[in-house]
Amino acid sequence: MIDPKLLRQSAADVATNLARRGYVFDADAYLALDEQRKSLQVETQRLQSERNSSAKSIGMAKAKGDDIAPLLAAVEDLGTQLATSESALQDVQAKLTDIELDLPNLLDDSVPDGKDENDNVEVRTWGNATSFSFDVRDHIDLGEGLGMLDFDAASGISGSRFLVMTGALARLQRALIQFMLDVHTEEHGYKETYVPYLVHAHALVGTGQLPKFEEDLFKTDGDTPFYLIPTAEVPVTNLVRDTMLEADQLPQRYTAHTPCFRSEAGSYGRDTRGMVRQHQFEKVELVHFVAADESMAALETLTGHAEVILQKLELPYRVVALCAGDVGFGAAKTYDLEVWLPGQNKYREISSCSNYNDFQARRMRARRRNPDTGKPELIHTLNGSGVAAGRALIAVMENYQNEDGSIRVPAVLKPYMAGAEVIARA
RNA sequence: GGAGAGAUGGCUGAGUGGUCGAAAGCGCUCCCCUGCUAAGGGAGUAAGGGUUAAAAGCCCUUCGAGGGUUCGAAUCCCUCUCUCUCCGCCA
Image (cartoon, rainbow, N blue to C red):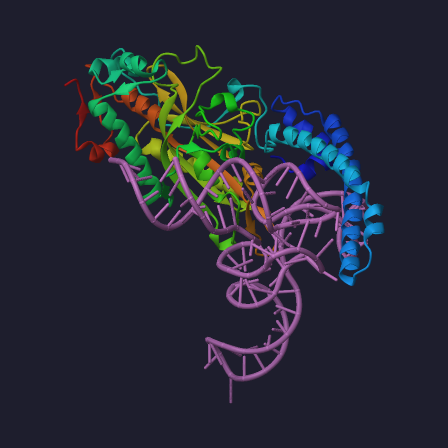
């Protein structure tokens, strides 16, 4: 959520910033609504004040034993007036809140202009596109050739966008997850966490998936439904909801491995083949909680931590700065890591690292006490994939393939694969 | 699933219809005292919002959330969420 005070004072500037995303913020309509709110609030508060003082004098009169009947008569109409005024105020405030929850975050000035992913800016590359002396296969051919990847079985159980893996391939994904968690906890100072995969709506409002993106989520039945998490970002970031942190408790870094569940509504026809886009996938997530003035530096650090994973796996990748039109709803700035996939002959997103600044913190009421002023202030939150395990598995399969369809095990994963060098058809 | 008890400020915890935004303690800030340290004494210390150019001041809201009763609700009633205890079941 954008600071409502900023919206009121600089609505035009906010509209200009959001226009870079292609988002139309009707500043005049908002300000007109806010004017309504203001006059209703002044009137409501005047009536409330009147009620409070009369209630107080009735209380004192009663304590003295005086007759309170005339006092009661004097405030006869006040109740209904107040009720009318209060409910009108509530209506307007609800409308304002709806607008505010719908507004994406302000973009950082360093975000490049652009409409969609074609306008993203390459920041750096690492490694060279893997070269082969034979015709490369994609991960589907490789996995099915090994007899370890079965989309037919999965669709029989759950339909499209699910997969079944068996044997060494299933283990390879587990190895990737273990490896990533170990690097982040042992080398990058993250605290490993285990979190719920089913969450209440308010947690998703806190991180920004609700109320706007309900159709992207899976939801259980019942009066108080659960939502399946679309990313570990949701439960992990909500660790600081409604907290007041002391200065020495920041920064904090958390990592978690969770499955992620996404309905992929609206992505019909995209990546229908293979395991690139699934309803259920595994991911290792990184989350930072930092003081306000540290978040931009933290974004660089966080991105670097995700990059280390790809470097250790010796997978070629590039870092792109997302352009204004491609930055996600709650983020102020985002770097994507794109890994080289020989099977598609292009780079594909494997990690997305974002600085949310105070956008999520405001929704969650996550604050720290400023040691200089003694006053509470919103913290900043960041998160990034470190990295998506399903897509990392694809990248390993395709980049480490042999001519006979077997797959070499990356050096750093061998300890997690009982020392196996190669995955071959059994 | 059944029965019960709870949710109060940064934290612990009093408060069961009126002058209660809320005792006390802890923590924190400032000051004093003590030749170090430990300890002691005093004062201050919730958040969000409105009014304002800004501040001061004044006002409003907030005692888990939402409704209700009342002139008046932390306190009474209803619903929900969460926590704890006991029973049952269970990986």
